[in-house]
Structures are given as structure tokens and as C-alpha cells.
Length: 447
Image 1: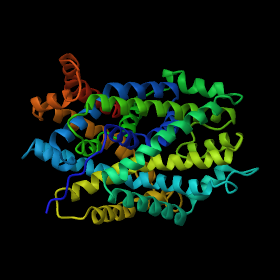
Image 2 (image 1 turned 60 degrees about the horizontal axis):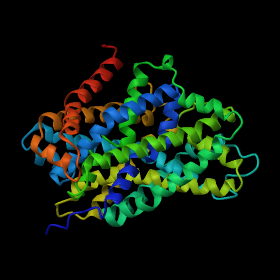
Image 3 (image 1 turned 90 degrees about the horizontal axis):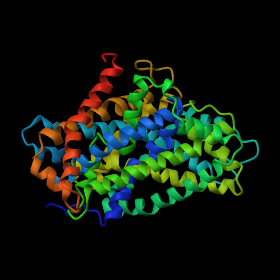
């Protein structure tokens, strides 16, 4: 017997859930340290350009594919292009989501444990050494694996409840609260003595620091932060009604993503420079800088606890989308229990994530092409699989999918004129593929 199809209950629920899928670790955790390691303002400017010119059109394309087919990622491509190699794009997305979640959940575990330890009186105390605290969490194999397991357990529980009762309900409450707390934090961060140097580092471009690798990282970051390239948004939009404008929804998600990235930079870099910290210190940047900022605020321990809790939920809304694409691929329209599929998928991600979890401790000396398992998986997904997936999607929507259906889905629910549609369509056919290919070739030293 076929089960009732999953469905979003409202437009705002879809937008906030999609924004939650996009924001999370991409905008709050990864963006600041990637910016710090790749030149500051010039990287931020490139990130915005890639998000608007490349990422946004691809996000619209994924929405069109998902709603146009009315099916999750794997079945969507099969439905729209049966008996075609294009149908493999969905499998590419599921594999990418699986690999992405295997290291993403490690960081999610860090956030979960750090949030628990931030209960007033545990972390915030006079003379607290935040770098040492973060090192204790990441340096213990048992603690990191425990964090990984607990984080995935939460994902399994929420995704098991489905779209309306799980993902959408959580996103409607948590995303607005995250915005509010971020604005409060920025208001405090920019008042520190020396904060102006951090603002200048973040907002004043220095193009002499850019190279081909930085450009690739900026492109990969724009895809990572929008969750495009692995067809997560194809699955999300397959639950969407025909009365909602896809370009408007994609624009809302992109604007929120850029805004949160801006807030993250303004919250982090003024504190980095005010306290004499190193902006290029990598993945631990967020966990070291934020407590410094909160410790100097009235009721700082309470604010830190609440912010980390909300950050944890933002991280979870992103991971929900990754587990959802895997779960949907093996449960929708099949005689399989959603809870059972989510549990098995979560267990497999846990097993796959163990090497990444151990990369900060007992496997720290084990490298693949000079990178730890964690960094190698991150590089593979963010800078290879996501751009390649976006290239496949651009070629699919521009040359394989029925043009009439593409235009119909683009124009439903809005009053955009044909010129805007034609511009977007040409961007997807030519500009997006050419840009991705040039950046890849440039990284390889070919151009």
C-alpha cells in the first residue's frame, strides 16, 4: 500500500527549512574559518558573487527539478529523463550527501558536546582556557565518537517523524531565534577595542591574497552554504505545492544565507583581532572566539549557552536535509518504514564517520594526499563533488529536461516576465557550466 506523500504545510515552513538546510555549519562554522584562511574580504566578495551569479540559479534549478518531477532526488531524474545517463545525477547526490554527513556529523558532535558543557558554571569561569577546552573535546577518541553517535541519534528521531511534524516544526522555531541571537552577538563584538581591524580584514578586499585555490574554495563554499550540488533541494522541493514561486523562494534562501554569513563574520573577526587571536586557525575558530566574546558580556554565560544551543539546532536543520535525501531515496513510494530506513542510514553514516572523528586524535598522523581523513572528505565533497554536481544539474536543466516544463515551473506562482526567465535559462546553459569548468581547470594549472 502506497503511503501518503510528504508535504510542506506552508511557504514559510518550506523557506525556513530550506534556509536551515543551507545555513547551519556552512554559514556559521565553515564560512568564518574559510574566510580567515583565504584572505578575508576578497574571499567574502568572491563568495557573494558566486552565490548570486552561480549558486542562486542552481538553487532555482534544483527546486524546478524536484517540484517538476514531484519525487525525491533519485526518482526525479529518472522520471524526467528515463533511460538516460542523466538519471545517475540523483545517485551522485545521495552519495555526496552520505559523505558530507559523515564528516558534518563529527562537527555536529563537537557542537552538541560544547553546548552541553556551556551550561553556566561549567565553561564560563574565571581563567577558562577555551583552546584547551576545545582540544580536550576533539582530542579524545571516545568523546568525539560519543558526540557523533548522539548527534546522529537526534537526526534519526526527527527525520523519522517526516517533513511537517519533524523538520518543518523545528525550523519554524529555531531559525528566527538564531537570527535574533546573532544580531545581539554582533552588537557586542563590534564594540570591542580593536574590533575595527577585524571588520577591515573581513570587509576590505585584498585581491593580492587570492589564487586559483582560493577561488575554488570560494566556489565550493557558495555551494556548500546553499546545500546545492547534491540534490538535497530537489528532495525538499518535491514536497512543495504548485502555488509557490520557486525563484522568490530561492532568492529568500540565498539572501538569508548571505546575511547569516555576514553576521558570522562580523561576530567572529572583531573578536579575533580584539583578543589577538589568529584568523587562520581553522575549524576550531568558532569554538574559541565566541566564548571570549560572551565572557565579557553581562550574563555572558547564559547568552553563550543559549547561542550554542541555537547554533546546535541550526546545525541540525542542515543535517536533517542530508539524512532526508538518503531516507527519501530508499523509503518514498516503497514498502519500507521511514523510521527503519532513517535508522539504518544513520547507522551507516555513523560507521563511515568514525575515521573522520578520529582524525583529530588517534588518526591525526594518517593522511590522504597530505590531508587527514576529515579534511580529505571535506575537500572531496565541498570542492569536487558539489561543483561537479552543480555542473551536472546545469547541463541537465539546460539540455535534457523538457523546456516547456522548466518554464512552467519557473513561472508558476509569480508574475516574472519572460526576459527574466530567458536570462536565468541562458545562465544555466552556458555561464554556470563554463564558470565551473574554468575554475576546475585553473586549479589544475591548465588555464
